[in-house]
Image (cartoon, rainbow, N blue to C red; front, side):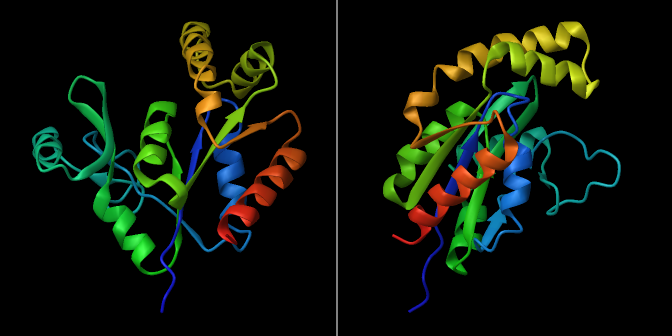
Length: 190
């Protein structure tokens, strides 16, 4: 009998290092595939449907909401939706692969509630708000106003950390990655 895949959920404030950790894990032999989210925004640059995102019109997205086709979804801006299709989870897990999610804290908590012991939720936490601000400033991609908005959001997101199975403090990337790998090994080998 083929083993069905498990769910690995990552959430964190912007700049905490979550995406860096997830990218490193994709090459570590955990048999994981990245969940391709759906969005109602237009493709950017060379993005392709079914590769970076499943691109839907706002009306198509709303229709799928009514069909209960999403595991979780959010309207980030007016008519700009993001979400995880249940069919994406089924597609990956049914072939025995583990699925990794890079989602906001509310989505992470909700997915964990739905899947219980079949999922592990990991919250990547910056060592401090000051360090997070420094990281965002060093990226050089956001204005001071945008950074202030991200910091305010991060302060709210940090309150969700106790709702996750594992909190990884990313003060040192190698150490955070080693701690994450250990937690995933234990979870996947249950």
